[in-house]
Length: 204
Image (cartoon, rainbow, N blue to C red):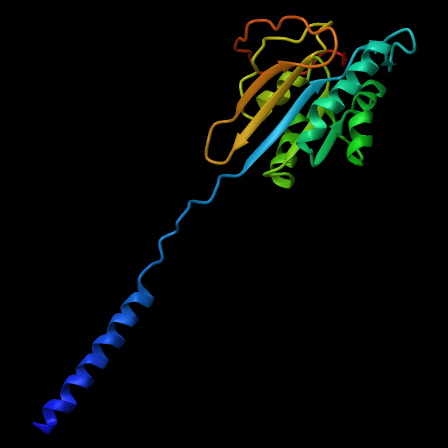
């Protein structure tokens, strides 16, 4: 009888130890899935230029300066982590008010090497937002380099008001939205599929 009294406590202790060991080894189920990384790229053409100042490298007209201020108002609330511009007066001037407000130094990129820029953004600014200012003949090709379909077939000589938002979500296809910003916004043309663009003409 004495052995019986000793047996049951020992058995109970062994069962408790076994149960605790099994619980420790069981995989812990995550309560929530990790959110995918979302990178947002805002792309615009430079604002209106004043070709009377310098035909080869014009600065902005009065209307262009107003649009540059509108770009600052439109995008500063999104807190971009980086700003990119070509090496021209008109693109730099378009970014200047936003750069000053954000205390960011615009980074220069080569419009003929758009894929280098898109690769860099995906590598260095994943999960953040950035702004790119380009030209009528490289803005759509940048959208294409990110893997999205440009929503218009071309950007005309007088088309300055388009703001393209490319969203790159980890594990999903890139998407692009188009809207107008700034003064004298005209009605946007019907979105249409555009073929990938190759820059062959001078920047506009």
